[in-house]
Amino acid sequence: MSKRTGKPASRGPARRRAMTSRMAIAVLVRASAWRRRLPRVAGLCRRVARAALAAVPGVPRDAELSIVLVDDADMRQLNRDFRGRDRPTNVLSFAGREGPETPVVPGAPVGLGDVVLAFETVAREARAQGKTLADHAAHLVVHGVLHLLGYDHERVRRARQMEALEIAVLAGLGIGDPYRAGAVS
Image (cartoon, rainbow, N blue to C red; front, side, top):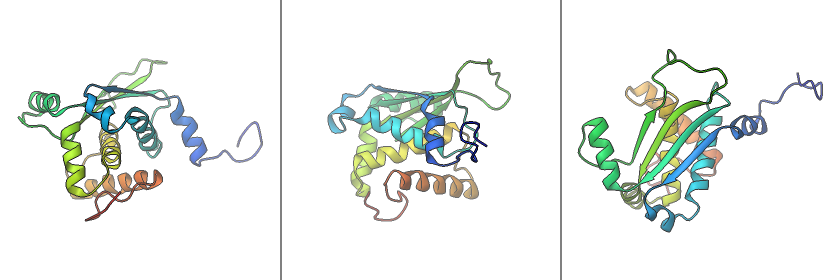
């Protein structure tokens, strides 16, 4: 019950927006190609990340995350250093917490981690899949944020859950199903 109105508290989109509005989402554009092709890429990333965070129950209101937009050279180095794969990839997520046992300082923001996207790989995939760069980048931001929140696609059942949530978040943003063959979004 709302103390102000005496009516049941809202659980709808306005409440979710209010909950995520306090979350800090930093966007660092390290590769200028991102801004050349998508001049409002930072705003896009923040809007999409907030939508992904709002779709998952239990995300701390004071959560923080970073989205880093790099080129393939930087991504290749990250992929080599952290995953042992000497090639670029489209998106990497680096969780800020190792699990529920990670100590949290009372009153301090909760660092969810970093999501990193590689321009050339994302642009190449978007072209090959017949998608706009903005829509494909949005999908990968959602995908990366869900990884920070503990979702994975290592097993078929978990992959289906993650994909269903990605599809729902993107649909709420007016973006088509990224897994549908020949989908143009």
